[in-house]
Amino acid sequence: MTEQGIHIALASEHLGSFFGIPITNTVVMSFAVILLIGCIVFLVRRSLSMVPGRAQVVFEMLFTGVLDYMTETLEDEKLARKLFPILLTIFLFVLIANLVEFVPGIGSIGLFHGNGEATPILRSMNTDLNMTLALAFVAVFTVEVFGIMALGTLRYGKKFVNLSSAMGFFVGIIEIFSEVARLVSFSFRLFGNIFAGEVIILVIQHFVPMVLPVPLMAFEIFVGFVQAAIFALLTLFFVKIAVAEAH
Amino acid sequence: MEQIISVFGIDWKLILIQAVNFGLLLFVLHRFLYKPILAVVDARREKIERSIKNALRAEEDLGKAEAERIHILHEARLKGDELIEGAKKSALGEEHVIIKDAHRRAEYLLRDAERRIEREREEMVEKTERDVARMAVLAAEKILRTS
Image 1: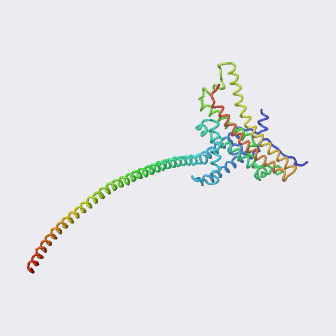
Image 2: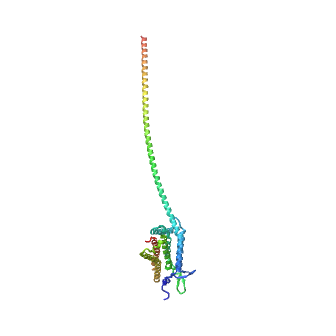
Image 3: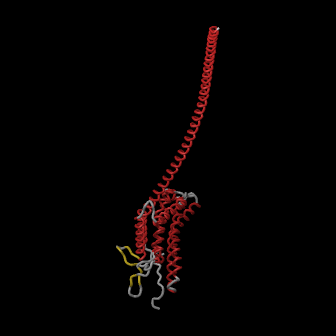
């Protein structure tokens, strides 16, 4: 059997390096996504006015809706305003990356090596654990920073190092583990969902190249939206827990 | 652990570069999208709030003006009624005076006329008596002459 099987790699493919920084196809993809979002920002910003156009209304509704929900959840408008940019950026970044996943050319245009194998230049951004880990680090870091900002270093640290009682000490250790576990759950949830979607579509395409992948793609777009929302919402809830007073 | 890292291709440099990418995106979105749009939304909300407040105040003013208008109208009507009433009353009083005056005058005139008539009648009677006496004398003379 000559190279007919499906080639699935968990790791993203190296394309080369730039000043010692490894460049993989997901890095290229994330640049492309940022560029795309930059274009959207430029277009929206150009026609910003007191009497909004259609695009502006959509963004305003999204922003005010998210901000209202955050204010409701955190019960603190100032805090919500501070957290808002990070949260919405996570959401938009993940969402747009998941939506452009199925644009033709992504995963199919690549560098040929001559022996029938190719390395795709673009690969769906969240099918790389490095990307999701980076986002998880950002999210967890945000949570910690907001916790310290709200309570102060000492009072926030008391949640993890509590020497007042044996029970409190063990609870603190469990807290530390759950903080670290968030990194894993954040990164693997997003990675797993998007990667699994890609693989399922790849497998279906292998057997039935047309029509059948379409509903699956639609479902994967839905999954992409849900994952983006979950990532942002979990960050919000963890911040809510972090700014709450220790018991 | 080593195996996981190699299977998933985890590389701290890649994590760092993706985190930096996120930071870049965060900066761009915050600077060029979130801030301006939220500023516009806030400005509009403030404007609407102010407009509503102004409209409420205008409505209140209108209500006050309406109330004042009604008050003024009412007062004016009262005053007008009073004036008319007063005019009527004074006119009635004057009428009485005029009529009484006229009566008095008429009585006076009547009495004057009666008095004059009485005097004339007396004069006439006197004159007639005189005339009768003279004629009697004349008649007597004539009779005396013929006899």
